Image (cartoon, rainbow, N blue to C red; front, side, top):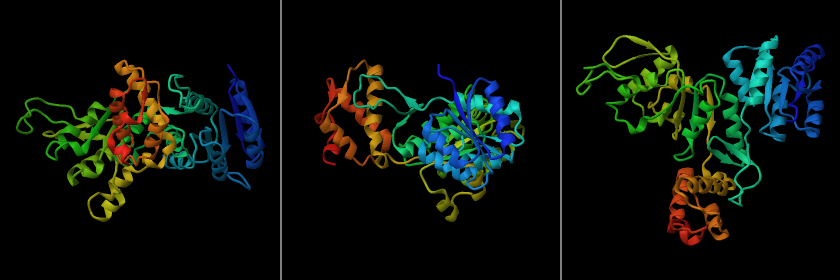
Length: 392
């Protein structure tokens, strides 16, 4: 196994050399640079597993360097060393493109822990099965998020960056773009991964039942409540709760959710007893919440509580280079699930798939591939696709 190679960047020689010695003692191969220009020269010459850079440097600071690194390779892992230790400044560093952060003065134990965690973040390159020949040798496959486009690489990088910073996340995207997949990926890459992931589509639950569904109820709390029941917050204790379609929440539910985010406590319907919960919330919407705030339909204070970190999912039509990769992924998956042996998509069918608008996004692509595989023999052809694709 090749040695892990790390680049340490700091214009303070004593501070830089101290980190280098600590990391070398851990068995890492470490290079060093005293500024952004020297760092980029080394990055262009070598393959690094991890970059550690100071936030405050003369000439070109850490923020500008992060932009340069992202332009060079958006998947390169970067840890920011910052003079701030609050969650707010940690999130700011993450927004700049860092995978994690270390507060100053650097604690040796903290440095070793953060570096070890960063190195162990799952690789985002995937070597696919040779059975589906159209897929290139390397592409992004993080949980079930797949693609080679820059926009999806940036989404995956954001997931990796925020996973272990225990704050709420707001995911925006059209229906079918994979918002729940993003929430699951955040959970699976976080320190909460061993606990429960609970998903709730708040738009699919009646206004009369949503409070009980989220917060639970006691026996006799309302007609039909013959037993006490835990809500989704209690089910997700120590784990992650994914709330989809939050724009549909009533004022009453929004107030209750805000209270939980502020206090980490819930009350079941029919009870005044508070129950402590330790839950990370990932919320999602396909509507512009700021517009809803202006229209008086969504609480501004709740928006700011949820929007600590923001991830926007692009529609499939804006990442056409990913369409065939995702299609091939579904072929592999359905081959295994249903005992099929579809090898590929022919060129005519591929052109139709790439040029279709995909208003239903990845969910629509999944359904069309599944339908095509029913009639296809060993190759999906134009005749296996629905008329909606053929007619454009």
